[in-house]
Length: 379
Image (tube, rainbow, N blue to C red; front, side):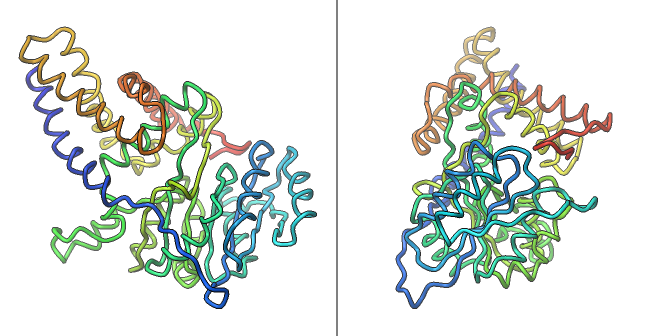
């Protein structure tokens, strides 16, 4: 048990350092106002496939911006629900909205990159902002984004997640906890200076990250990387876009979505499981060794201390209690930041066990060749 505590403590030296840095360096978009003569045209691009439950709120929020020079484009990606009807109704009430009927997907493309590529061809803006249909924007989102893109080739925003069901509250915050405790946001923007110059650029790409729920580009940067065609067959297309950006010598800056971008990612346990099933293992580059290593580490760090707290020797229980206390404090700080229920942090071990089960299913899919389905398509 002592070995488990030493491993867990070593892991926390790193995660605590990263977490504290991110509390200061993972910024929100700054508010900014523009005179009418200084506003570049912004194209808000929304791919939509079977989004009847969310598309009206998404599009309405995109149309309601305090920025004057923008257009909203929505691509109906061959929806089979009421999405086209809702879009026609919205279009009748607002000339700023342009709707596009998506073309059939080529075999060598995945659905979302194909939809975004079509949108980019129709967009007229100097700035392209891609958002998912389950996102809704505050009315300052575009002006803040334009301000941020004055200093970056691309930006990505991690939305404030709306959580309603038990499973949403249990699982979704863990995604943000992993982000805040494992990936220094500063290294997404610039390569670590402590790396030798000879390998800094190559290794720095591995720190690339993005959230496809909101990602914006200056058009010249978008065209330089080849747009979404550069990630046309990538399931985790947002992270791959960030890597392509950095490989091309461009920069991407990462922000949180407080007071700017909101999202309700999933609405049921089935949606959460299937949604994460398609990209959890892929997010590790399908590296089985790394995937299993992180799975074991998560078990040692988050589950073992609970067992030791209950069954260990008194001095072991003391150190286990410290480790668990650090975990809960970190989770509580995130809960306060994003206005989530802090009591759910106490169920962190259950959250980890859920992800362990998800990981087993992902490996099963990989080695049996079984594909996940999303929005009626295999991915």
